[in-house]
Image 1: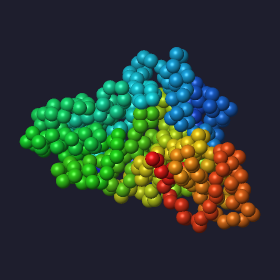
Image 2 (image 1 turned 120 degrees about the vertical axis):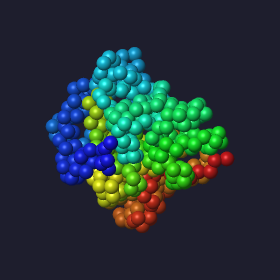
Image 3 (image 1 turned 90 degrees about the horizontal axis):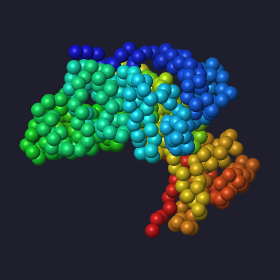
Image 4 (image 1 turned 135 degrees about the vertical axis):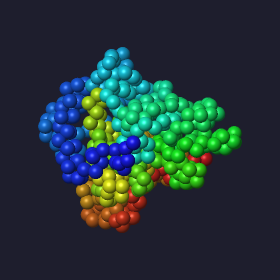
Amino acid sequence: MTTSPHYDHLEIRNPAEREAALMAALPAQVAHAQKNSPAFTASLAGVDAASINSRKALAQLPVIRKYELLAQQQAQRATNVFGGFAAIGFGKAMPRVFASPGTIYEPEGARADYWRMARAIYAAGFRPNELIHNCFSYHFTPAGSMMETGAHAMGCTVFAGGTGQTEQQVGAMAELQPAGYIGTPSFLKIIVEKAAELGVKLPSVTKALVSGEAFPPSLRDWLAERGIAGYQCYATADLGLIAYETQAREGLVLDEGVIVEIVRPGTGDPVPEGEVGELVVTSLNPDYPLIRFGTGDLSAVLPGPCPTGRTNVRIKGWMGRADQTTKVRGMFVHPGQVAEVVKRFPDIKRARLVVTGEMANDQMCLMVEGSDAEGLVQKLGDAVRDITKLRADVTLVAAGTLPNDGKVIEDARTYK
């Protein structure tokens, strides 16, 4: 049995070596997407793939957000169910197709560990030749397959528990004695509680990899009190694994197969390290080559390396949703519009549009970190009206006053 604390040497590379490898792979992935993915043939038309060899160059490319991917899929249902984003078609290269709410269809390629989940499973303490009880869904959504293919790549056997049937899950765990559980944290709690109710002991279940919902410290500690060490990972049906927790429990370490940027919500502009923004991911998956895919999730980079010796960048984990679009006086106001206002004034570093009042009696106030040099308040008010077609008060506050939480629009209205 493997005893190394790390899945492979990639996790402990010199950060400069990793960055060089990622930037070396980027131009080829952009060229591949342009050639084999019709959606990127269109959106990256005129882009010299060879020149996209740095993060600065990557940041100039458009961000593809989930609602745009869905819209393209819906528009092309009759001719291309993947909206032109997939680089492979039905057949041996695509053993399965899954569906996420929306409906968004995702291809699963034939390569081993297609979703790159083995790394997260290993970090959670699982090792080759163990049995894993997988309670993610096996139908419609890819979660069950994501974990199973990762476990197989690692050399594990999987019991396809799926969702529901709690008493049967307890019975199977008691008889099969798996090394641990993979699934949502809340369902693991339900299983453990049902086992206690039935008087059934589950001594073999000592570790868990959880995802799909929040994993608060209170639940982590509750499981630990019952002998189960639970770790979380962050993955999506579009991208596969993005980041995973380690035994240090200090943020989530980025996967080795993605390039992650954190941008100001509503834009494609990277934020300074440590500032909260939207996670934008470029996948190096050749079958589904998503370039600058906006996850819609907020996070921030943590300083320094992981204490476990893994050298990749760490993020704080899920910190909320980036799409803060709200309706004001019958009109939608988007984070991108706030960003457009700020872009007109280079000296402004951070702003937040606060919507107050009661429904049908909305008031907007643009909070800006800055000083009223050369009539800035008046100019900002004019810019808001020009871009949103709505009036807003402008309030200047001291630098560092606005919270670093990724919010661009705060809906503080009272709903009666």
